[in-house]
Image: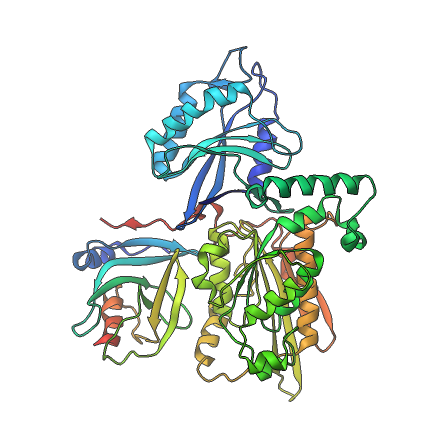
Length: 114
Length: 457
């Protein structure tokens, strides 16, 4: 599925070093670095956004390492999974909002760590 | 540093067919493989992902060599390398069995061409290759390495899959293999494998040099490793971070009460089973998840998954497709029917690079993955029994042996065998017939190799 160019423009306004990596016919958005909400340790990691349905989640945000945080997303149910030749970690977090833009998805997922 | 060249069989045959054609004046033909790499600290896989013939018009009339191509053909190859971020390998054909040998002209004239490709794009692997009937000589310049590496192991991945693991055997080992082959040809066979000689005259050598990755060593994996070891397989990468428990004893072949008491890793039990048959087996089994064994799995000639989760199957297949490794999936599920009775469903699936994948076959889809994710936290221990595992795993081992030895000369398409426990039936799933000749859209061959990052800006 081709990415909406307006949404890409919005995303690159915040994350200029983002881009696409493909795996299994899905275009993932790689954000490097992804600044995490205050209180997270480490403060930034690489992020991999899956903007389409995956494992029952409307979208998923994978991180390049497990982080320490005091937010509500504490159920790490993707641990070291390999996507696009790298290992990734993710918490169980459903944004429960449809029609989010790419940036909206990232923001909604970061609430898990706030 | 281990380096293996992978050629999907379709591309191998395509190149051979093109290179064997007569040219109006040149005595041989030339083509180019485009390549991508998978790299880890200790392993580099060079994947051939496309073949491009050289146009008739680009040959120069030169009787001193078999074929000489003009600068246009070379410029086009360089443009392909730069525009598509791929390496270029100059290919020609010598034919014959065994490892083809380069002529003096090849050794003099082709290395400078590799150097020119590297000057154009140093991030990719370039070089030259000579195809034989079932093997290939290659000399490659790899990224970050100053000198060319030659006579690399070459795997031809397809139906059948040919494993040319030259580097695995020492000079002495090679000599013993050749002597064994010669003895077999004269009617004296290794007694251990005498009853399986119908698998082919060189089947013992094929089996002995193949590296099998086995993910999951519980009820399924323990059957598989036992059978593979009996057949003569002795190179394994074993992945499972679990230890045996009391509830595994109903089906984990080789597991004992003492193992349960010792909380022994399932990989250790599997290793023990192999070592009872092969003292000198080469086994890498660190008792870790497969995701933490990527370096070792990259060197496998095929990977067998005996895992519980659909998401793990998806991830394993994605890994295998990326690195052009055949993947065999074995699994079963006991579930309760509406009438209160139980049924066992199972599957053996052979997923081959470039061919229909488990998504194409309808075995994996977002619904089953979502359902599994939703159930995951609530799920207790899944029911499992030894006989259905045994039946499915025996069929899987049969597929492995046929893929490597081609003894039946009939395995030419992906496999999807569906099992019904109530009728003890194992039959080809109907969807396979509909997929004949279909190319996988989820994992196209030209996406093989390490993932490529495309920045937006």
